[in-house]
Image 1 (tube, one colour):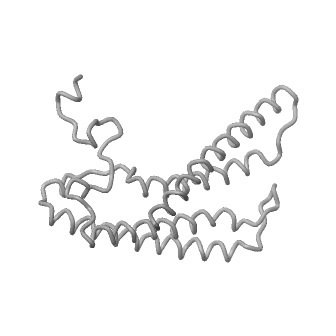
Image 2 (cartoon, rainbow, N blue to C red):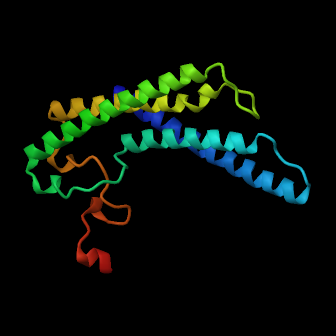
Image 3 (cartoon, rainbow, N blue to C red):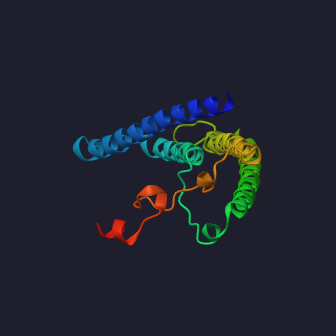
Length: 183
């Protein structure tokens, strides 16, 4: 049930990322067109585009964490047996959860500090720049907790003990051979 809820959030995040990207394109190119063609511009374009980029980045990091989409290497872990891989994966989940806790702590502090501050152009609370860090840290920590539970309960197959992608270009989950590279 929790897996389905997280998947729905990630599906929503994908749509929100697309919306952020579309708005950024419209704002930036619309502003450029208006400045050169009409000698005017969209006042909030730069500031809102930056904020949308921050939100899109943190939402994308959450989705990538869920889909094991971050790039990595298994130079050391690849030489270990299944039990060693399990230990390393569990340790990496714990370290990432600790990192999520630090991100949450820092984003929370910045959100509280900047709640009363307003942005120069939009005059909106600057806390909205730091809230995506809270969203990522909370949902990322939950994702990692679910993944750690699956690992500890034995619901992770030996073939799935790699929690990242080796390469965007390599076929078969990153295990490229010389034949794959040259063809």
